[in-house]
Every structure is written in structure tokens, then in C-alpha cells.
Image (cartoon, rainbow over all chains, first blue to last red; front, side, top):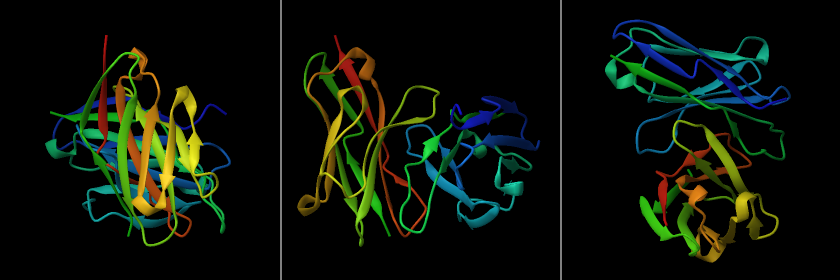
Length: 116
Length: 113
């Protein structure tokens, strides 16, 4: 396994369009995270899945954002009616967690979104 | 709730000099602490992690960090900086009972020839 992969790496879209990003986690990892990173800032938590269940969604996210993880494998993040303020790097990460421990989160290369 | 504070958004060192990047954490329960490195337009790569075993943690590329509970710190060091170390470094915290990784605002390391 080569790690967490994200597609596409770059996306330029016009304001008002919808975009969808895909994340393939490390295959045995049961937790999947989406983070957003703007220039000069650390990653900010957006949402989290344990297997296929979305357990938390940040208050940072408006209703225009939706994420899915069907069958507990890959995940998609969709942004509807994009705005210029959505321009950021969207990072996906995965980890293996049990009742007793969390492993470190492994990050993908990110998807750079530019809304024009 | 957990948080991390990284002191110094920009740090410059000469090639061959000591690298010291500061991270202080806040957590009401025992923390797990991490340092990640990010190169331009790339994702985050794990440098090292503290998960309640040895307090001095060695990572990749010659980096190490020491967990000091009394100072709530987890500073990152490297004895001799290389030009290839120029990047942005993030400290992060989580705990066994949570799932979020909370990141600091990052420190950009510049290495001068």
C-alpha cells in the first residue's frame, strides 16, 4: 500500500460550481479525516468517519459541504455552489484506532482548490 | 479540550546550526503529540510521535523531541540543519479518548547557506 491518495491534486473552478474530491485511505485504517488548510495556517478539522459512519462535522462547515464514506472505504468531499472563500488545500488523513489506542494520522498529498 | 501553541511562525538558522522549534500543549488528559513536516504544495509527513512511552523521541531525518510534562512542552530539535530541512513544521495533539488531531499554526523553517 502506498499511503493515502487524493484526487485530483489541483482543481480550479468558477464560483458557483460544484466540486467533488476523492480520498483513498490506507486500506486497513478505520478512521478517515478531512482537514482544510489555508495559506499560513495549520490544518483545521472538517469531519471524521469511523468506518462508514460520519461521527462529527465541524461548525466550520456550511451546509454546502457534504462528505461520504460508503462501505467504509474511500471517501468523497463535495462542495456545492463554491465561493472564493472555499479556496484552500483540502487534506485527507487516515488512522487505525481501537479502544486502547490511536495510531498517528497519515496524510495524503492534498487537493488544492482555487475558486475564481 | 486540547490545544497546541507553536512559538515563532518563522525561524531562520544557518546551515549546520542547531534547529529548535517550540511547541507547548494543553490537555486535561495524557496527550499523544506529533510533529509533522510539510513541503510546498505537499501533504503532511510524520516526523515523530510521543505516545506515553519514552519521553525523548527520535524521528526521521535526524530530528528528535522531548516530552516535558512539567513544562507542557514538546520542542523539536535537530543538532545540525541541512538545506533540505527548509519547510513548514506543525505540532499536533490528540488523546486516546478523542479522534481529532489538533494542529498548531506552524513554524516555517528557513536554512541559510
